[in-house]
Length: 112
Image 1: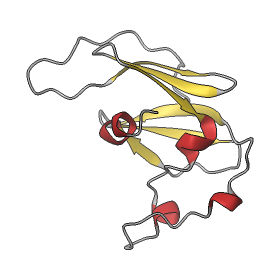
Image 2 (image 1 turned 180 degrees about the vertical axis):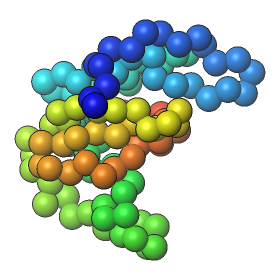
Image 3 (image 1 turned 135 degrees about the vertical axis):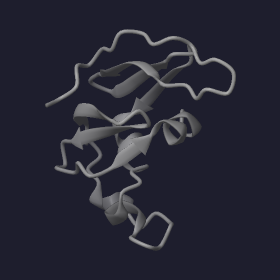
Image 4 (image 1 turned 180 degrees about the horizontal axis):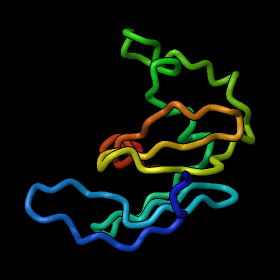
């Protein structure tokens, strides 16, 4: 079942706690994540799609990106998302890709 596009805010991280998304909005041009520590990241759809960490996109056992950017449409967009446990998000992309899991720490590191 798809996750609602807006989540209620979570408490700010305490001590060494890692930030988590307070809200996720899939817009026409980008995905906006507001983190529970107040940081706001806007990810253009294709930018995030090209950062998929699944075995197909990274190359199973290779540990490096194997995805050919030429195979990802310029107009690819996220259609839906859902949480994966308490550590990641998963997106359904308009190009049919859905196996990528985006850990929160990777999303924060790739915030444009």
